[in-house]
Structures are given as structure tokens and as C-alpha cells.
Image: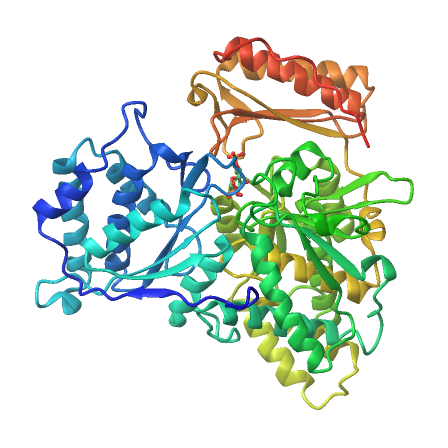
Amino acid sequence: MHRNMPTSPKIYHGNSTPLADAELAALIDAHPKPSSISEYSYGTAGFRYEAGLLPCVFVRMGIFTALRSASLGGEEVGAMITASHNAEPDNGMKLADSHGGMLDAAWEEHAVSLANAPDSKHALALIHTLSDYAKGNHPDATADGRLPKMVVHIGRDTRSHSPPLAALVIRAARAMGATVIDHGEVSTPMLHHFVMHANGHLLPSSIPQRCNESGYYEIMAMSYAALLRTGTVGSGGKRLPTTSTLVIDGACGIGASKVDKFQRIFAKLRAEGCTTGLPVLHTVNFPGEGPLNEECGAEFVQKQQLPPKLYSKSAAGVSKEYMTSFDGDADRVVFHFEDKSGKFHLLDGDKIAVLVSSFIQDELRCIDPDGKAVKCGVVQTAYANGSSTLYLKNVVKTNVIIAKTGVKFVHAAAHHHFDVGVYFEANGHGTVLFGPKFYDFIASADARLRGTPRHNRANIALRRLRVLPALVNQSVGDAMSDMMLVDAILFLRGWDLSTWARLYSDMPSKQAKVKVADRTVITTNDNETAATAPVALQIALQAAMDAMATQENADGGPKPRCFVRPSGTEDAVRVYAEANTQKGADSLASEAMVLIHKLCGGVGEPPQPLITNRL
Ligand code: G16
């Protein structure tokens, strides 16, 4: 098959009749809980461990996803096998509920209980409880005593151990009598898209229902092209030479292969005469060209504030004026460039939130100058650079909420608080959610503006806003869709990355991690800005921040800030510090690392002071 052709999923039809208890028990017993695991935990984004520790969880989660689908009366759900930004030896599972977003929080608890059931007897008891719940909830569908229809979509990343782990999930879901749709290698946001589109009744009516890989590309490309076309009339709409080639660092993971397939759609758009504004996409760091996520990809670039290593031969001599980095499962993206003096500049999730929210707000105000019809806002986490929060509040003049780290929290906050909720974590994970009031607003603007000149600014704004829900993945953060959105906005604004970067200057910051024997000894407040245990840790951190404020003479200006939190995806405690100077941020982060090591059971030698060497 041509390497640019989308692949078709493999379908295993089910009959809603689980295997007998003895056979299910045999399947569970064949994959026991490793002795090194006292309790599996559902972290920031699902289960994530060294791959060899996962077969036990994956068998049980195959069963669990089938039961989740049954509990929803046959709505389709998904399981993505990936450890995202982690190193190659790790793997994990992200679960998608029928709306395409993350698994419902109440069901996370059932997933954890099933993963940790001490043996097959306890696991079967839980399976029966969940089966009874599903049958009780959907009596019509279970008149013959069988479970309601169950459909589970499976996707996996490019890790070498993902196929055998996926095979276990498929086997277990089939043992429950579920229909399994195996999409093979896909990005995490693609899997979420498939699930969202499979449950068409949950999809906003303005988004065409396309539950396959080519549909995923086509919806994105068509709405992207429609957005670009609004730049050919009225103001804006010029592509600067500095943005004519977009170089995509695929982290040596799945994103690179998928962007390459997306090229096919670009070729089609060009053939149909849509040439205005299309950049040349140049993908580097394909699977196998280098180690996954190592010295490349969004996690490395954003955390280290360094350019990625370019492993591909085709990267020789490539322009570094307009670059993006995806993470290992392509649900995060950050932008970066090298200026004429060779200096590296990062445009992270905070910068994306600023660009996207101000664009949407400007367009809304072209139709509704008072800005009252639709409530817009941005959700950030404690990692958001202080300058970005100030810019959003003071210049964009939008609402800002700080939520706990993790897409499941920021997504929920955006959905709950805003009609147009932009959420981006600083690490590049984010999207824009459009609520019912936004769709009503578009419908009434459509009726009001019908018959007015096409080039009227309000009409242009309407055309721009109307395509956004199809362009921006409504289920989860999506590197490819966010990349296209940002590119289109830059094109419409007539900006390159340096113009965008100049909107505000980040406060110098430093991120680091520390290994401790048990990271659960650290707990934090709701939005993770302060540690609640050990008590002595927060007291010492506060003293360090106060001392830095005095040292930097920060009175009246932004105050140095530092927080720590246990990672939900890696066996480490994370540290974030920002100050008015890089030296101050480095010193605060170093001090926090030493405190963690001393007060929270650090492993190995005490951490050495951090020194940032800028490129
Ligand atoms: C996952 C979540 C992100 C979150 C990140 C934090 O990212 O999906 O929303 O920001 O974990 O990880 P930690 O808890 O280790 O700081 P990914 O891309 O690894 O799935």
C-alpha cells in the first residue's frame, strides 16, 4: 500500500455474550498482578507503567471497556495504548468515553478497582456488579438476558510493545462479547475522534460525521482551507516567506506518520485550486529514525526549552524559522523558531492560548461588539507562565481559570464555565470547546447577516467562526488540528512566529523532576499551586520564594513563584519555578529540588544546582 494512504480498521464482530466465568477467570489468571505493584493507579491520563507491568491491567481494561460500553446502552467507547511523552520502555492506556472525551471520573474508580482486584474471583465479582448495572440501566436491550450491545475502538502508538498489549485488550473485550474495532497505529486524538464520531447522536450538528481516518483528515483539511479562504478577501491573508515551510518534529512517533498521510489531502486541495496560504509541510523525526521522545518532541522542547534534535536525513539544511514539535502520541504541540542570530524561541501552550483566544474574541466582536452574547474564557494550569495569565486578563481581557494539571481537569473546567472555552496547558496540550450557546449565536448571526455583502467584516467573522468546531478537535487536544488552527490564524493575521512571540515576554522559568521513594507523600491543594503535605515543605518553599522576591526586589512587579507536585505519568516529583531572572528561576527550582529530596524521601544523591545555558 502507498505509505500516504489512510488505513482501514479491522472489525471483530461480537454478540454481547461473555465467555463463561471459568474462561474469563482463566484469561485473568494468565496475567497476574506483578509482585512489584502494590496498587495500580489511574494517573493524570490513565494507567502508565513500564510495559512489562501492564498485561494484568490491559486484560482487565479490555473487559472494562466492554462493560463501560454496555453501561451506556451500546454507545461506543475507546482505549488508546500509549505512554505518550514517556520514554520508549513505558506504555499505558488512555480511555475514551462515548462523547470522545476522557473516561467519566466515577468510572475511573471502577477501572482502578478492577485493575487492582487481588485475583480472578474478586475481579469476576466486580465484572458481575458492572454487568448487572448495565443490564439494570438498559432493561429493553437486555430482555434475553444478554448485555446491551458493546463496541470498543482500539488504537495504539508506535512503541514496540504496543501491538502485543493491544492484542490483549482486543482478546479480553471480545471475551466479553464486544465488537472490537481495531484502528491499528493512530494518534491519540484520532482515536478520540473516531469514538466521538461513532456516536453520531452526541456530535454537534455542524460537524460532519466521519468515523474513519480519511474522514478525520478531510474534515480538518476542508475546514482549514475554508478558514484560509476568508483571508483572501478583506484584511489579512498574506503568507510571509518565514511561514511558507512548516517543519514538523514528530518526536519519532505516530504523529510524523500521520502528518505524512495528511500531505495527501494538501495535494488534493492544491489540485482543486486552493493554493492561497497553504504552507509546505516538511515532517522530520519519523518512527525508527531516532529514539521516541528522546531529545526531540514537545515534552523535551518545552521542558528543556531547547530545540529538538533532528534525526532525519531529510532535515539537513532545513529552515528553522517555522517549526512545531508533537509529542509521542500527537496530542500536544508547541511551536519554536531560530532567529537570525541563531537564538531559539519557544511558543508553548500559553502562547497558543493567547493567540487562539484573542483571535476568537476578535471575530466574535465583529458580530457582537459588546461581547456579551457568548461567554469566552481560558483555562490554564499552575504551569502557565505568569506573563501569559496577565496578558490574557489585561490585554485580551478574557476570563481565566486555573485548574489542576491534566486534560481531564482543564477540559471539564472549559466545558463547565464557558460557551467558548479555550484550554491549553503550557506543555502544548489543549483545544477549544464550543458549547450550545455558541451554536445558537452562529445560527442567529447567520439569519441576521443573510443577504448582506459577503465581504462585510461581520460576514467574514461568521464564516471564520462557523468552521472552527470542525477544525478544532472537540474531544481532546490534538497536535495536528491545533497546528492547522495556529497556522491559519498566523496566515489571517499576517504574522510569523517572531511577531507572535513578541506579544509578551515569558517570565524566566525552570522545570525539573526529582526521584523519591514514594511520590504520594506529597499532596497539593486543588489547583496544585501549593503543597499541603508534608507541611514543612510548603513552609520552606514559601520562605524560598519570599527570599527570592527580596533578592530580586520584586515589590510591585511579578513575584517569584514555585510549586511542586507528584507526576501522574512518571515516577517523579515535578518542580516548577519562575522568577524575574533566569538565575532566580534556576536557583528557586534548585532549592525546591533539595527540599523535596530532604523532606520527601529523595532517592540517591541530593540534586545538584541547575544552571540554564541558553542557545
Ligand atoms: C498527560 C496529560 C496532560 C498532562 C500531563 C502531565 O500528558 O494528558 O494533560 O499535562 O500528562 O503529566 P504529569 O502528571 O506527569 O506532569 P501526556 O501527553 O503524557 O498524555
